[in-house]
Image (cartoon, rainbow, N blue to C red; front, side):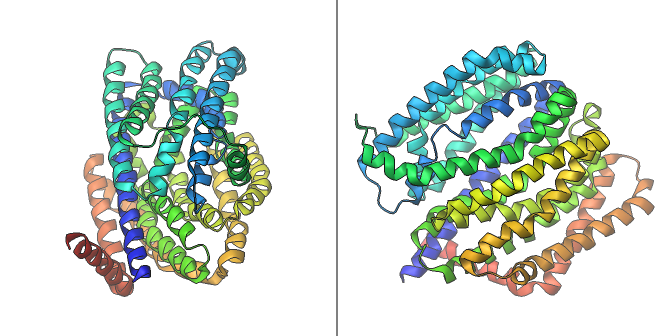
Length: 489
């Protein structure tokens, strides 16, 4: 009975977490397209230049205490209050550092406006630090419905304001004010709606307890950020704001399956697996089932997006963004595989082994950064994308090695788990490519082409699932029906 309730709780958590992720990304993606029609790639690139540095500092804003609060089985009032006051202190320190060093960042990029933007963006450190504990408590209590509604509302309000400001000609500042408004709304809402309030307590014992886990999480986040954002730094410095604007826009599209689907599972799995961290067999079962379901969804989406990039970009973004096409074709495929790797950290953290992710980052980060530099020297932005994708896919085996150690999963077991979605998506991709090359060119308007190609791709992939993956399809539908019946009762 306990296991049944736990599974239902996990399914409900995954559902609401996914709804929150998908909802925020749909709203963000839709408004992002509108902003891209108003603004130029250079304006997105300028903000990305700033966030390379401020995003790096975000890693240290809570010193991993938020993850420690979620992972710890028993959490005390002293733990929460100590974490809160530390977060506030770190936020003020980070704001001060960036306010003072904004001129140096502007000099690095040789662009004066970057200094002004850095000083304003740095305010986010103070704003967001006030609600870190509140957000962690929401996740720890598996209250994903509340979190989903709040995040969607924040994105919706900030995006509408950002578009209005952009229409008045404020350019890159419309993007800056969007981030401030979103964080202000979230922080204010958490403080009003979550009953917990800090006490004037700073406990050394709590600090040591949380820091033991949080310090490793912070080190992992630091190396992970370096791993994922060194490309932005290199592109911004060597190729300039226009290329960086193109790249960051494509990269945000590539992250859609990770943010919408994988992170929905990941957010719900972390606190849930932490509660059953002694049951390795159950964790393995949930890991394989989650990766398989994610693969069935993300692989066709990203392979399909890659195959219709020539129509997708001009229809949605316009002619100012045509340089996106070859970049999107490559990064979409990479995004499909990357969506499976997000579960690795969940396994490490839920089992109290964040050091494994630290080891992985220590090995892979220098390799990834080297691939950025080699690629950009070979063929500019496109060369970087090809080298990044190839290197990352080759490193997947090494990353899975540590998951294998913890839950006794075999490489062949992982490959067979995603074999069918990979095969079906690959066949769909080749079919769309051939149809596009030999038939679809007769349909002149791009919107007709993308509609025809999308329908063919969906029908082909759905047919494969029905013919060869019917048991998994029926099992998933049955699980959804059981959850709905439980909710009704």
